[in-house]
Length: 347
Ligand code: BTN
Image (cartoon, rainbow, N blue to C red; front, side, top):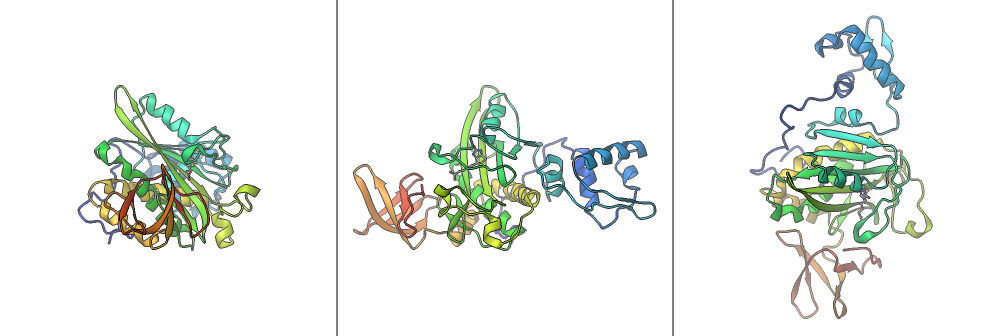
C-alpha cells in the first residue's frame, strides 16, 4: 500500500518538486520549528542565516501571529500558530511540497477566477491560490458557493499537462479522493463521495470540486481545480441548512484549517500522477466511499426523468445505471439526481 492508503502500482510515487524549487525561508523555519518542542538556535547557521537574518525572520513570523518564545539555553519554540491560512505555513506542513507557489488572499471574488487569470497570463504552475473569503465563489452549474470568511478552505490549484489532456476528465475524481483522504487524515470522520465529486459527511455535503480548463498561446492547456471545503462554520444560511454541514458541525470540534490545506495538497500531489497509470486504484477508493452505488437514482433525459439503480463506476469514473428494462446506461456528470436523499443536487 502507498502512504496514502491507495495501492501505488506502477505509478510515479509523487509529483516531483519543480526543478530549482526551494522552500521559502519562512516555510523552512516553520518546518524546523515543528521538529521538536524546543529547537536549538543553531537553526540559524544550519539554514544559512546569520543571527540578524534569523531575528528578522522571527520578527516577521511573530508579527503574523506566530507565538515563538526564545529560551536562553533551550532555543526556540513554536507555541502557537494563528488561525489564518498563510502560504509558507501551509508549505511548511506539507510532507512533500510539489507546488511552485502557494498564495493566500484575504478576500477575492473567486479563487478559480484568479487561477484562470494566472494560467492565461502564462503562469507555469503548479500553484495554489487560497482565499480567506470569496465574494462570488461559484460551484458547478454556475451555482453560488457560500464562502464565509475564515470558515473553510477555498482553494484553486493550477496545473499543466503531465498526463495527456485526453485524461483530464479524470481530474475531478482524483481531486475528490484527495479531499476525502485529506479530511480523514486530520479529522475523525468518514468521508463519502457523492458521484461525481462531492464530499459528504453524515449525509450532508461538506465539500465540492469545480474543474475548469483554459489555454494560453505559449504554454498550452492548463486546468484549474477549485475546491471548497466547509470546515469551521457553526451554521449555514436557511436554504443550505438541510443539505450542507461543516467538519466542525460533524465532529463537534474546531478544525485546524492549515493542517487540512497541507494534507489536501499532499494527497493531491500523490494522486494526480494516478490520473494515468494507477487510476484503477483511484476508482477503488471512490467505490469504497460511494454514496450512490447500490441505490436508486433518477436520470434526467431529453424526454423527462427515468429511474434506475446506480450499479458501478466504469474505467473512466462514469456512473453505470441499470434501468428497469435491464439496460445499463453510462452517465456523465450532469444527468443524475438521487432519489434516496430526495435532493436534486447531483450531477
Ligand atoms: C460544487 O460543489 O459545486 C463545487 C464547488 C467549488 C467551490 C470552490 S471554492 C474555491 C474555488 N473558487 C470558486 O469560485 N469555486 C471553487
